[in-house]
Image (cartoon, rainbow, N blue to C red):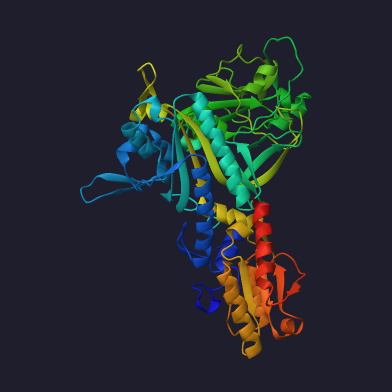
Length: 570
C-alpha cells in the first residue's frame, strides 16, 4: 500500500476529547474516527490490526475444539425477561420497538440466544461437550463511554459458550479457554495476567479477568509479591488479622462530646481503629441496609451488592438515614431496626466500640451476635496495599490494568431456565453446565497501544501491526532513488512482506514523524545518502541505531527480522 493512496490522515495536534494514550494516538494516526459518543469507525490501518487479532483468536478457538457460528444482534426482549438478567443489565441494555410494537434488545452478549439454541440441538450426553463461538458486534448503552476503544457502546467481541455434562467437563472447557487466552495475548505480543474477578451482570459461580498492565488502566489490580495471587479490587481477599482476644464485657455507655469520626472517637477513648465499629447506610433495591465493618477497614460496595443479590445499591441520603431514627456520627447496629450486613472481620473479637444512637455518646463492649444480629456475615471489605495475602502471607501491592478478556463458570441457571437439558447414560434429564468466555477486539487493540508506545507514537508488536514495514522514500524526484525504492518495494511485496510505502513528495521530517506515529515494527529508508553508503537503512521502531542493507539483500534481511519477532511472540 502506498501512503499517497491511503484513506486517513495523520494529525499533529492531540485531540482535545482524547483522554488516554491509545485514544490520542489512534486518532492522531488516522486509524479510528468517532461517529458519536462511544461509537467508532475503524479506518484501513486499524482494521488490518483488528483482522489480525481476530485471525489469532479464531486459530486458538479452533485449536481448542470450538466451532464458529454467528447469532443475531436483534434479540426478543422476552429472552432477557425470561432469564431475569434484563434487570441486572439495567439501562445498559439497548431496546427498540419494531413496526408491530414488539420490543427487541440489541445484544450486549449472547448467553440467552445460545442457550435457546442448545435447548433445540443438544439432546443426549453423546452431544456433549459443545463449544460454540462467534466474533460479532455487541451493543451496550454505557453511561460514560471513555478512553476511545476502551469503553464504548458498540464493539466487536469474541464470545464463546461451553456446554458440558458435569463439573469436571466444565473445568476442562474452562482451563482450555484460560490457556487459549494466554496463547492469544502472547501471540499478540502483549503482557497479560489472569486475575480473580467479580462476575457482574453475567452471573455465574467463578470468573477470571485477563488484564494488560498499563498505568492508564481503569481497573485496579491487587497482587501478591510472594505468590501468583492476583484479583481485581472488587474481588480481592486478604488476611484481616484478629483483634486481641477478650472475654465479653457488659455494655457500657460513655460520653464522647464532639467526637464523631472513627479516628476521633478512637483517639478520645485511647483505642485502635480496629476496636471500633463502622456503620455505613445503603439503599439496596429500595430497602434500607446497615453495613457494619471493623473501623480500620473500608466497605467494598461490589462485594456488598453481590452478597445482597440486588440490582441497585447506593448510599442512603442524609434524609433517609434520619427517617430511620439514626444519629449520624453516633450510630451502631445496636437497637436499630433494619437489615444488618456485617463483615466477617467482626467475628474475630468482641468488646467493640460503636455509637450509642444518641448524639455525643458511644457504647463500649459491643459483642456481635449478642448485642445485634445480622442478616448476613461475609467478606465485604476492600483489600488495600500492604495488607497480608490470605494465600501465602506475603504483602499485597496494587497496579493498574485494562481488562482484555473475561471467562465465567456460569453453572446451570441459564440451562434450567431455557430448558437446555440432556439425557444422561441412565436416561435421566439433566441441565447442561455452562461457561462463557469473552474478548473485546477493539479493547485489545487499544490495550496494545497503551502498553507499547513512546513519546513519538505507537510501537506495534509485529504480529498485530497493520503493516510489518514502513518504507520511506526520500528525494523521490531523484531517479536513482526512485528506481531503488520502487524495486525494493516490489521485491518485498513479491516476497509476502507487508509494506506501507511512503511515496509522497514530503520532507524527511514529515515522513519520519508519520512513521514513528503509525508505529510499524520496521522502517526502511532509501535516500541518496543511504545509496551512497551501499543500500537502504533498516531500523526497528523503538531503536535509534540502523543498519545499511544492500538493495539485493533487503528482502532476506527483513524476512529474517520478521521471523525472529514472530517466533519471539510465539
